[in-house]
Length: 382
Image (tube, rainbow, N blue to C red; front, side, top):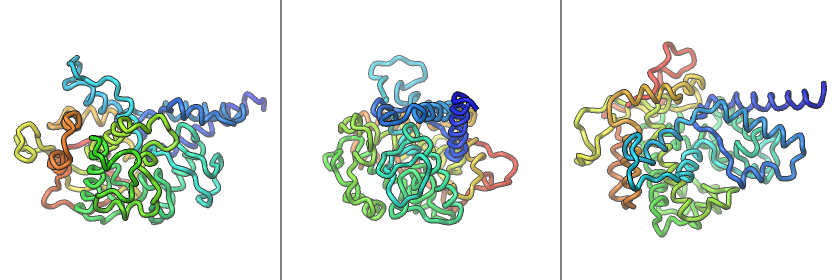
């Protein structure tokens, strides 16, 4: 086989390897690399490895559907679709980076965490910089979770924890089957508080603050194995350009928006239909979305069905349904953020967005998302 054909085969193999991991997270984003990340990806790489990495990056990008990005741009850039209004924020690159973060948080590959091809101990890993390593770590995490292994800061990195472990609330999902809906909601709202207070620039939530010592219930326990992490290490590992406080604030907002957006995807939650005329906290300008009947949990879902619930056609069907829809909710949050609304004043709206029905159920994969379930579910809801 010629070198050219060998290279083509290697590129295809990596694309397929990473692509098999992607459906579980549905790749609702189109991965992009910052200038810093592209330089890191090329640093000290052989000519062949650079070509392989380039092929893998291309392969992953084309299988993606930028649903999260679409929602974020439509909600943040203008108050009404197609309107050109003074005050629209057209440069939202860091909010979009934050929306991507929940699906692809940078992590340092530590010694003793597996002998995967393409992984080098001590390197910072993201999909766009080390696709071979990223794909293998992701698939290993998915397999371990399916066997019942509990993923925490003691044994796992951020990528695995967010998709299969103790940080699944970053996707508005329960940590495990059977988790009480009140517990999942507490986890979601604790993250919302952290992200919001960081996003509005509260003095105790600047880039150098230690995550494990933040004054939020549950955070010290959640990050007790990550005692040295600062907020900038959480959101901007390997990317010095993102470490300015104003940029981290936008990334934090994007991370919160990701959680909110996922909560309207039927693979993540089951919502009731909104009650016409109902509002949040008595505010006429805060229409209430449908309350949550169940937070789903991922490890025992059919990954293909979960992925289909995050596709553009699912979002389009959702936007034709009852209001407020996901874009309406994100716009309200954007308005509150632009006004630098204090957490105590923004909290009632987020509590309403994640309101539970009186008969909310413990977490499960969701009847429509179990392997073999038929027919396919109605995708986005609420």
